[in-house]
Image 1 (cartoon, rainbow, N blue to C red):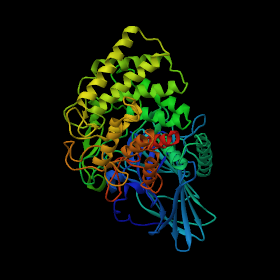
Image 2 (image 1 turned 120 degrees about the vertical axis):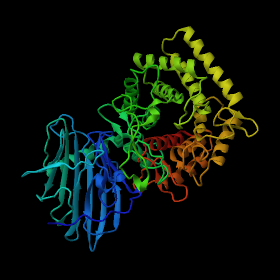
Image 3 (image 1 turned 30 degrees about the vertical axis):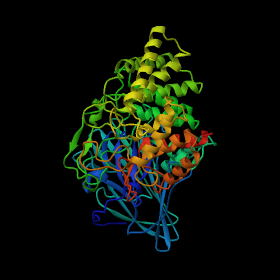
Image 4 (image 1 turned 180 degrees about the vertical axis):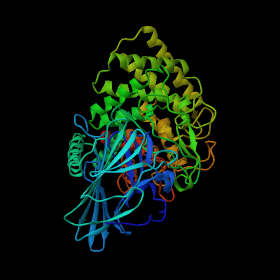
Length: 602
């Protein structure tokens, strides 16, 4: 073992190169060279300890891999699990990194976050490199370091990381270290996190056994996924990703584990997605329930009801994982950003917007559970009533729309359609729950008024399509939810005309779609194709019986996944590079729902 100088700054790693490991409380992004370049502790929206992804080389990393550049010969998740394997060819030998985080810690004296990483050599000894360089928070604070007989502790006030190593080797924090890994002596490193609690040390071999137990638990979990779902491997990977992005102590699903990965490299479209959107949670209800994961579906809805209780009847656009108002948006001016994409932001100003469509997603999620035979609790029904009453009162007002455009509110047709959906589904639930005749008439009257307004003001008769907003000539890919709403019959020329118009006018090549005409949102620069919309197109085509087209599109989209089957929010239509925060829960939920639509297509 010997210490070497810090290597030169790497070229930016493509977003799609990263793998996700997590424990349902936080998550890390790992590149194919074995570097953890993003990890917040003790939760998704906590302080960054490895932040090189958007904070530059001074923001910290944790790398394990070959000491010299070596080609990756295989990279995969172990089947039906969240354990990640990366193998490099080093001369005639092979070095494999197996890593994961232990999700199940209940009932045992374990740290709430336990990262386990093991290097295994085959064919002969391999020179490996370990670089542990944690830096805390916005200012990249280096830790206070204490080297003990069993571990090395990095501490910042109430936060501490404990590094364990087997076989025992000295790892100098902040300096790359070479270690020879022999075929009969794998190198296992553990990183335990303590925040405002005692630091629990776990021996590396015990931690490795815990990871094996965890792996078996994930395999059991995935075995429960409906075996009739087509493209099951992709669906299972998406469901595992959604589960990893769900904060298990609260049940909140985060939109992504990252902040400020750019929608336009080098530009300013960089947002913080480490929060929970009720819309995304509602879509997740349908994805989990349709795949046979009932408890996860109910858990998402339970979080929604708990998180919205203080603001009811208003539904916040986004919340923290504990159901509080998201912090105000601010810029980390000293952070260079991914590929010089600035500013790097924390917090999200969209929290202050009024988005009418969210009520439709949430009430529809409640209806999906009710229709599947899972009767709603009385508190759930009270919440649904309050949301429906607000929609009936405010549907005629302009709103910010689903895409959170930072301009003046307008009358988005998609928002009106979702308002119609909210009242329609609330009326259906009311068939088996108590509701006064007065409220029923009010909801029904408002629903009919929305349908009339959308037909007269939101439909272009000459082109045969619904439009982005009242009186607009532009289209919106969010209109692809039309077949799911039920406002038009599935053989309606309006419905088919809208699908075809969106596909034609917003097509970005192959299966990719822009969510609205590029350059029409008032922000500088452009953005990529929006991946959830492509899966919505698959779902729409399947729902109206155009199954062959839907299947071809779906299979093409599977070819656009990252090497590990993950998806970002957007994609560059030309280079096929993934853009935006990653992995994106909405994209993965839309993939699952598209597969379910193919399963259920007649």
